[in-house]
Amino acid sequence: MKKILVIHNKYKLLGGEDIAVQSEIEILRENFDVRTLIFDNKNIDLFSDIFSFVFNRNPKSLKKLKEEIKDFKPEIVYVHNTWYKASVAILDELKKLNLKTFIKLHNFRYDCTRHFLAKNHFKKSEICEKCGVSKLSFINKYFTDSIFKTFLVLRYGKKYFSLIKENNFNLIVLTAFHKSYLESLGINKENIYTIHNPFKVDTAINENSENYIIYAGRISEEKGVEELIKAFLKSDLNEISLKIIGEGPKLDYLINKYKINKNIELLGAINNSQTKQLISSARAVVTATKLLEGQPTLLCEASSLGVPSIFPKFGGIYEFFPRDVTLSFEQYNYDDLSLKLNELNNEEKMLSEGKKNREYLLNNYGVKSYIAKFIEAINE
Figure 1 (cartoon, rainbow, N blue to C red):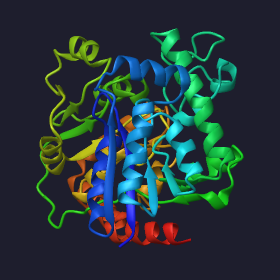
Figure 2: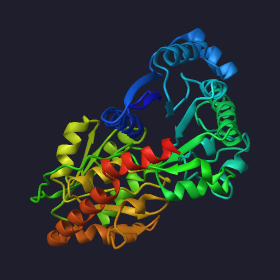
Figure 3: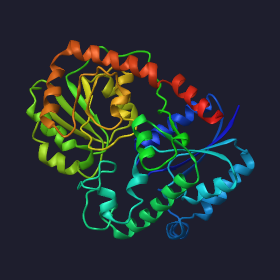
Figure 4: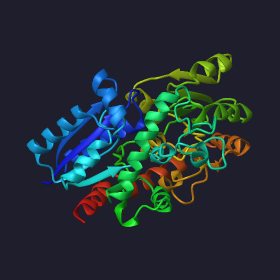
């Protein structure tokens, strides 16, 4: 059994990436000897954190890394998020140790945080489709509430991109779209592997859907939640309600604005088990995200349960669905979204779409497919 050390830095708020990493670790453990080195941004160590921010190097994190490597002697190191507690210095250290290292890019933030000038980040648009940040000035103000935090993350991002581009690390991405994007930035295509997040498909599905649809995720501008609500209100779904699960900066605003509508339920944050239960009985799940997503957890979860999805034709999302999927809408065309929502009245079609999506997910994104691709990559 190959020894694999998995490194991940948890986010302050639990999100799809943290859940995906934990699920992947559990599946890897069924096939390899796996040890984890997990950092957590919730744990504040003032001196160590300040040092890390100033020098892009966290001595405590590096010490833990060296101790793990000395004790475990891994053959493969598999790195996920490194901001900020882990620090990019762990990549420098892994290169020095000449350990075979794979870095998984779950999103496109590496490209958003490598520019000090806004014009290089946003190009000709006012909102970045990779991270959802709005253009505010000539400075690339990634953290809109703090120029200080922005400066720190841009220093980090510039160093991070330089490391992954110039040191020929093995990079793992979730979609062919993302691989092509990296190639356009000058990354050697020979160092890029397309390996989806593994997905365990449930053996049983609920064919008796109830009269509601679900959005689950961050409640924010870049996720298009208000646009989704407006499209829903314009549709003909009089007997179907919209349940919105999650938290974020727009939650209170949306609650106050739409609380009088009996067909819209803003549920806030609920646990993953409850969310999955609600999805299993939904007529469909829906997203109006404005972002280039990695692997859409909500949509894949729905497909695994035989529940259809409505989503924008954008980036790599379509790769997780059959080519003849009929419920995708033109990005930013919310009239088209309303029309797709109207199709939910056809229960027979929804059942057929859900089964088709489930079969596609099982054949292309199940655990066996993931393990085969992962073994091929690490053995090259």
